[in-house]
Image 1 (tube, rainbow, N blue to C red):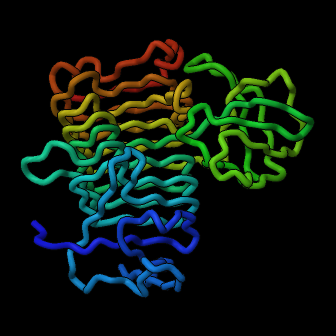
Image 2: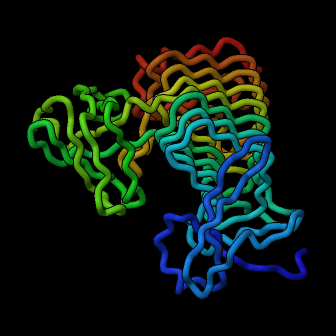
Length: 363
């Protein structure tokens, strides 16, 4: 246990918070990745009585992150970055999410351990990995995830709702206020318009973003997009998704235990293999929560193989929205009660979509 501690706040140069309300001193710096595990801090001077000039910790000093009491305090939040690597991180406890990434491309998470210290039964109070509207290759490997109070992994796209149409200019709105200030659109990206849920979802059409300007109100829930063509006013109320952010997801050689869900709802090809999974609600949940959070994206091709699965509280592979491509579930070691039927389908998955699943050999 730490017998003493220094408390300082680290602020980025664009931080708009009122520094007068901080409980301790702070320093302002921009972190630059120099490669080989080295991070260079470029310090900024700031005329404030609580400001200190440089990084205040000595080499080898233990660091503790105090995350406050709100659920939205994340361990790390990464936005609009390319070539993201997180490795050899051990999280014992935190009030909020772990890794939050949005609009990122090519992500590797390796040897990421979320496990509380002995004698405690909560690690994080929310999702340990929360990736939204990311693209490129997403690899999660060699990690241990446990005792979080929400999803062990949550990878999804994002729907907004079409609220108005004025020629080529449309206005969209996030279904849930938690996404206020999140603008998942860039000029040149392709939007897809659709209605319905599950097997009954119908694509209405697509358009390309001709221009998008970030709103002056950085907490806006509703905002405008200019398209390359007009869309019919009859599409009002439909869902709008960014189809330019399509990842390939490879989750392998991890240990998930004492958890709620490993959840996917991204427009993606998914490989889920060589994982050890036990004491969760299910081994994998494919569900989009469109009507509440606005999280979207039916999985395209799904491959689940060579996983070792222990006891679970509910179903094994829980599929609540359709797979648009094909699904193969093979060579998984299952508890006896799941061996005959490892896949459970939700009511929104029609029989024609259930026929896409191939379950040749599991034991």
